[in-house]
Amino acid sequence: MANMEYNVPSERWPAHPETATLEGKNKFIGFWTFLAGETALFASLFATYLALKDSVPSDDHLLAADLFHLELAFVMTMFLLTSSLTSVYAVYHMRNNNFSKMQLWLGVTVLLGLGFLALEIYEFIEYTHLGHTFRSSAFGSAFYFLIGTHGFHVCIGLVWITLLILRNAKRGLSVYTAAKVNTAALYWHFIDVVWVFIFTIVYLLGVM
Image 1: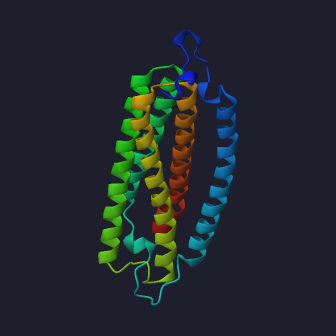
Image 2 (image 1 turned 180 degrees about the vertical axis):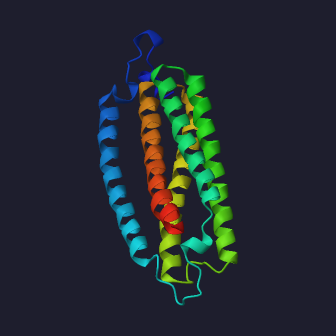
Image 3 (image 1 turned 135 degrees about the vertical axis):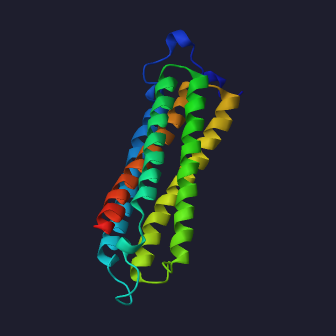
């Protein structure tokens, strides 16, 4: 009940409720600053991977071309890209003050994200059985650190969106909750963009 003052009737619902308040604007600006730092983090991880991807202890050790399955990586990519689209639908319905459809598409986003994580865990298990582990080579360390860091970010995003769904069920939709949904969606889009670079740099270039 503490946030009832944020509720806005449908007839006065702003076109961009996520930035309709000073708090919402500050969150928007602050979060872009945060994403700049995250971009620097992943840039350093990509640089490390590119420097170490051919560093293996012997000629007969498995390289990227021997390990990666583009079919699996492509399916994982489709899961994340589709989840990015469903988060867009959620924000669209949020801006149109449609609470139930916003919640629905946020839920679909979570399910697609969980599907991506399940495939990534399957991939890691398969590579481990083939001898490609975090300690097997510099290539292995760089690979798992990059992909694992991204996977950790996916987990954070899933927990974040799930908690929003649960809290929104009690709070409803307001300019206060709209700012939170928009920020989570921006984070999820960032995760998806990072994965597109991973798919291109790690998987596509790795099998060439």
